[in-house]
Amino acid sequence: MNAPTSPRVAIISLTFSDDTKVSFSKDDVVLVVGPNNAGKSAALRAIRDKLQGDAFSPVLKALEIQRIGSPETLSSWLVGWTVRQSGSPVGDPVFQALGQSVQQSIASHYWQREDHVLGALSRWFCHFLSADERLQICNPPGNIALLHADPIHPIHFLQRDDELELRLSAKFRKAFGIDLIVHRNAGNQVPLHVGARPIPGPGKDRVSREFVEELEKLPTLHYQGDGMRSFAGVLLSTSVGKESIMLIDEPEAFLHPPQARLLGTTLVQDRHKDRQLFIATHSTDILRGVLDAESPVVKVLRVQRSGDKNIVRMLDNHRIKELWGDPLLRYSNILDGLFHERVVVCEADSDCRFFAAVLDAVIASKSDDSKRPDLMFTHCGGKSRLPIVIRALREVDVPVNAVADFDVLSEEQPLRSIIEALGIDWVSLQKDWQIVKSAVDSKKPDLNTEEVKSEILKVFTDTDTPVLPPKAKMQIQAILRRSSAWAHAKSVGKSFVPPGDPSRACERLLGNLRAGGLFVVEVGELEGYVRTENGHGPKWVNAVLTRDLASDPEIETARRFVQDLAGI
Picture 1 (cartoon, rainbow, N blue to C red):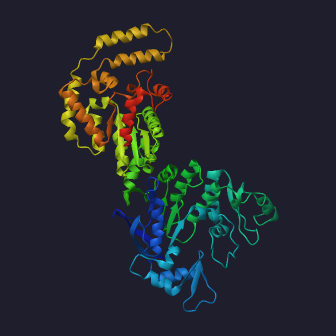
Picture 2: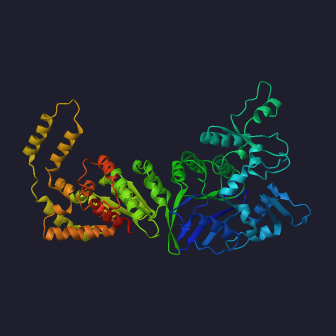
Picture 3: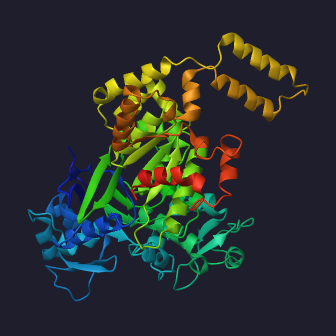
């Protein structure tokens, strides 16, 4: 193996306050996600502080690093791109760059230590990029002699590298529709301008008077809004520089969702070679952008708080690729659950809207100052998709509850898959389920096949419009429900189960399912909560949401159900 031409530092493991030790590869892009106040940003700051010295952190107990390169490689690297402080000892010079200085002997000392502390070298190899710094980076730096001085500011790299400038400008244009242009002839400063890039006329170039006059008509970046400056600041910081560990805190700050998603993809695709990225984010858009890059080096680390402990779980790249390849997960809001303390997965969007609205009404009616539950409602498009979503969220330790209509009990599948996805032992519930299923199966439906045909034919006979009206559709659906015992059970709920042993088995089954996270709608289906309203699905929900959800007596059963669901 060839010796490295530049020294590197890579984080090889982090040990969190719950004693979980997470290992990393030297080229990883690690997305740190989780609910509010879980310790995401604190984890990044702790990495920086522990590299500087063995600082205490309530989130991070320890880290391990790998130093790559010999002391001679480090010395040559410092000599090659830094400025020697005037007046420093000839045999032990002081090197200056990045607003830092280090003496050669001290640098050599920290490089050869056996522990995981970089001390005076930490800023040379690790950069914590805060929101404030991203904005400040866009301020024009002082000019430098391009041939005789090394860049000391990110804009200097663009100043002397046309290709890099155009590449970053293309990303900026994709986000904001305008170019990012270096002004190389502004005097003692090097500002960036934004707008349509001037095109030099015949026989002219970018140092011509005509070009400069056109360029100076464009606004400068450092006077633009925080969104533009923050986006450009992240691009500049991550595209240049010497640090081999980059810690980025909330890159979504000041950005609209499309720009945040683009930035997430850009951070992965255009990152500097030989660099680890640790990104703490509250943004689903950053998450989606990072996953859109489909890079084999991306990992997702979820952090949550339990008392004074930070609980962590890593989702490796293989599972990311598998989950992100599922259209249900990729094109829905399900992965938003990574940023919440708990997720409730329902069959349909109507269920989510109703339960979320009832929960809001219950919370608003309370007079205490207890913490609002950090609960997210999402749907998966039917019972059969519930296991996929549940497993995906539980993979990264997102607590999950599921809500299903009463007819989920009608068949072993998908009921068993849902139960096992939640971590419930199917065998322990199988006997009670079989008792309930047999009891309902044995009940004669209201209508046999001939009666169903006759009833439906009558609906068509009474309809003379070219398009089947909604009322007729509802009549047909009602007829079909009466053709099956389970269809009838869905419209009625647990009261359809015969009394005696079947009813007792049903109560045990529903209680055990609820304890494990599966909440079966005991009134049958959503519409069973308010039977005085007509309609189904969205139409029914729209009508019910106009009521007083906090006090309407007919909604009391739904309020109790939602309170159990939310654990309040």
